[in-house]
Length: 88
Image (cartoon, rainbow, N blue to C red):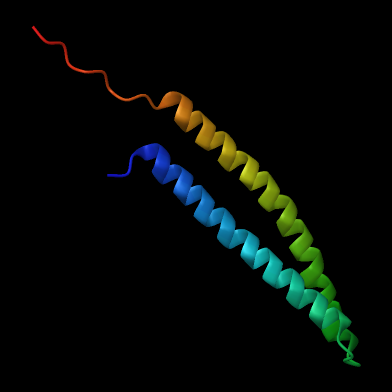
């Protein structure tokens, strides 16, 4: 059975991994659109905005990862298994 600490840590790892994959995907697509030889500036500006948004997303992902790490640390410090019941 999964205890609270391992559940929180696995959830943090899963959410963070998915968020970083989405960041890398949007960053790559933004650079591909921005650098493509398309004569329409509106499309190129869309690529620039995607890259800019991806950079902001990376910043907030780093901040969120830090908060998740603090939450996991607090959970490990506060979570203590129940002591054995007294025997007579």
